[in-house]
Amino acid sequence: MIRPSYNRKHYSSAQDRFFRPALINFFEREFPRLFGPVMREKLADELIGLFENLNPQTQRLKPGQILWNALDKDTRGDSDNRRYVPVVLSLVSEEDVKALVNNQSRHAVTQNVVARILREAYEQGGILSMRDVALLLLRLPSEASHLRIAYEKRNDCLLPHTGRLHDMGTCISHKDTIIHKVIIEKKDPSDVARECHHTQGAVDRYLRDYHRVKTLYQDHKDIDYIHLVTGLGRHLIRQYVDIIEQEPKTCLQSQMA
Image (cartoon, rainbow, N blue to C red; front, side, top):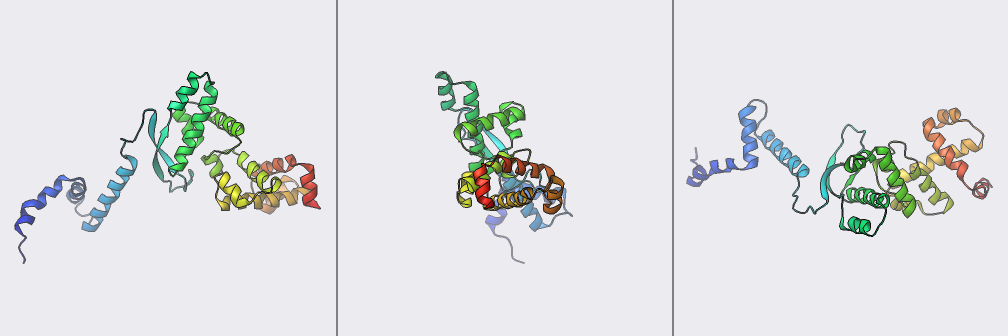
């Protein structure tokens, strides 16, 4: 048997003062028969990673900013495997204060705040729901939605949020906008996907479902028949029908020719 070196005997126990070895020793002491050495180390690494992700360094926070755990933009809120990412959001900025000093309406400033935090979360790999926004601003979700919609109309844009990107809630304006840009404005679907913060697959799905519903609707089929043939929900079909009925007649006639 090889005897441990002096340094190993003298210094090895000093490692126990650090976080990772302390976790490993905790599992060994409290669950001696449940976890082996490899599993203890893996669990320690996973817990440290989770802690660091949920508690990042806050020295970079500026006055008016907060830390929020947002849904990972690549997961859905109704998924069993939801993931979250910490994001830094600017609830109050110097620009907001300047706008108020210059007599800009509070309503317009709050619209800007909603737009800013939705974009900040998305740029950091997260995505906010309107419930998140409502909690952060201490508003009703319906008020937060009205503020977002007002900003989008005023600036002719679409903001990233779960209702839009994940087809959750009652959001429909994104489908309307995407179909209008592709069908009416003749824009490339890939360009529209980027403009609207959507994946190419989502845009293709909207267009495919739109054309399926439109073909049947123009053949004078009712909602129940379209539902039976396409498998789409009746509420979703009604949304597509609303879009179809709002199309300019010249566009409809040119497509039917």
